[in-house]
Length: 164
Picture 1 (cartoon, rainbow, N blue to C red):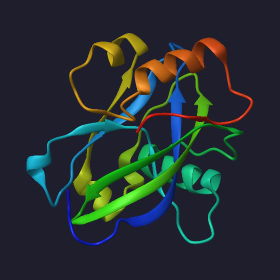
Picture 2 (cartoon, rainbow, N blue to C red):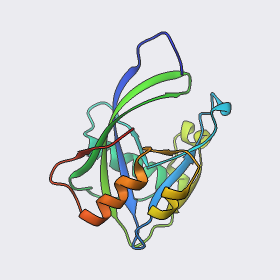
Picture 3 (cartoon, rainbow, N blue to C red):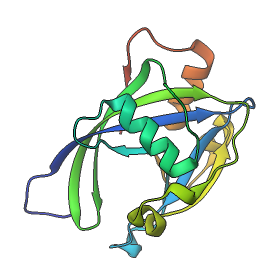
């Protein structure tokens, strides 16, 4: 972790894109400034631009990162606070997660920003069982267990706080 300065505080919006087979879409990425940090899988989404709501930012990021363009996401299902290093900076990001159900989707990386072109390498649809069995790094770390509950119980009445 980067040390010294206080973390950069920001907010983010993320999307759990779940297909008809109840698999979640994840992206595999790295930190271009720290290749030794390895790779990890994560949900589409990211930091909000000035003036954006969590839903607006999540919709923008979803379109940029996957080519999936939607008008709205509906109520949030989860929140979490994540701390991470990226591109030489340390962040503390308060994230809001939204659930979107799709029949399927052909992922399109054509909307990537310059940083995303260097940081995001592939996508994969993951089942809950695959998430539970993998030794790969997945964020949030509780994704498999929390997704299983969400799919079984449906949307919560208020966003649930999940582990980073």
